[in-house]
Image 1: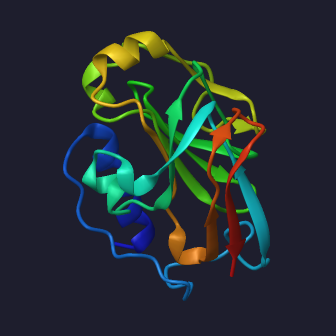
Image 2 (image 1 turned 60 degrees about the vertical axis):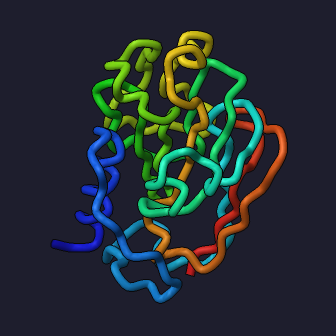
Image 3 (image 1 turned 90 degrees about the vertical axis):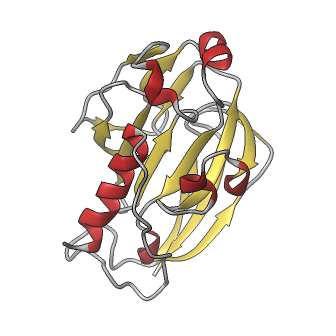
Length: 195
């Protein structure tokens, strides 16, 4: 089984609420890079934007060990203040889980991003979420992916902290995490330098 499949298996485990196997921490060595991945040969800085409005929180403060210990990737979390989740970059939507609480996107630069609204929100079985985008759809930064009922989710979810992580950290040379208030689709949250 390749690292790429293992990473997807770990993400699927997080989405479904099943304990994930430990994925080795990323290195800057490029091991596990998929041949022909878009952007895999071009070094440069890429910005990832907020998928929802709110306040950036350290990923280590997310009340879920899979995110806090960076098992599925590194990034930040957002304490949301808005009810629209948008594309954090231009790319292709990979997977939107059937309960609409999480999705993956591969950016045009080949970054694999995972956005997971709240903690244990899979248990809500889709209540409070309305899918707008579809799997395989090309999206531009700021395009709506999912609409949420924030008041309901604040009441029913264990936490509304929303992790935004890069799952292919083995292809990243440097990650800069930004802080402060953010506006969906307009404020950068991460700066990434590829190898």
